[in-house]
Length: 270
Ligand SMILES: C[S@@+](CC[C@H](N)C(=O)[O-])C[C@H]1O[C@@H](n2cnc3c(N)ncnc32)[C@H](O)[C@@H]1O
Image 1 (spheres, rainbow, N blue to C red):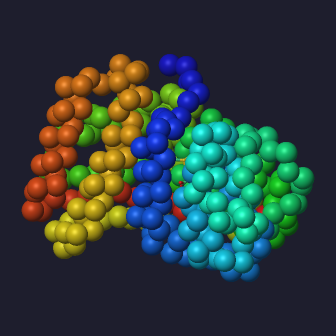
Image 2 (cartoon, rainbow, N blue to C red):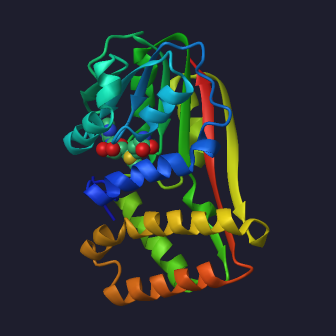
């Protein structure tokens, strides 16, 4: 089937708020190992509503961040959220397509891309563009999903069925829900050196009920964010959504339920 372009999660207020919650929720996993202490001039590509920008500045207050996103709605929300940081000249927002940015060569000493490359039709083209605008010796961090890693117990056929359609529609929209596994290849093709990748596993069961419950809630919000697009594509029915919610409730109530998901974080140098 031919690929179309689009953004699976959409730009509703609810989805924009989900991005803030998601960024905070995953902060300790995403930022463990990110070191930008020596950097001053960072480009954040696919910044969305500025959820990571805010966290980046908390961890690395010396940074000045240029945020790029192709969506006016996302940047409008980012402008509200980052009002103080923009006033202090710590953040610039720039409405651009990451595949062809209007910055000069060798402008930034670092870059940060999070949950973004999975949504673009040509990730290597984007990475080549990021490479171009970075200074020699600059460092890039990319964090991406690997959706085939998702596992839950007890066996939940409707969740699995829904997850297949969620990923398939993202794929047909021109994205790549398995992008984490390809980061090493993509960074190499774009010209980056010293590429390091690490798989971050979220493996939760009855040993840590509180975190498991929190993850199941986050995951429910992520899965349900795709419902309007999947209904529009006629991939699912309202009946399936009802059954999906029933299975999720079972997972949440089962004493020994298991949640597993892995994502990949890469660091490389120009
Ligand atoms: C899932 S959001 C991630 C936002 C942010 N990095 C975060 O972690 O909260 C992906 C963002 O990529 C943006 N995007 C998609 N394609 C783009 C492109 N070609 N150029 C720039 N931004 C793009 C979307 O508008 C969206 O805001």
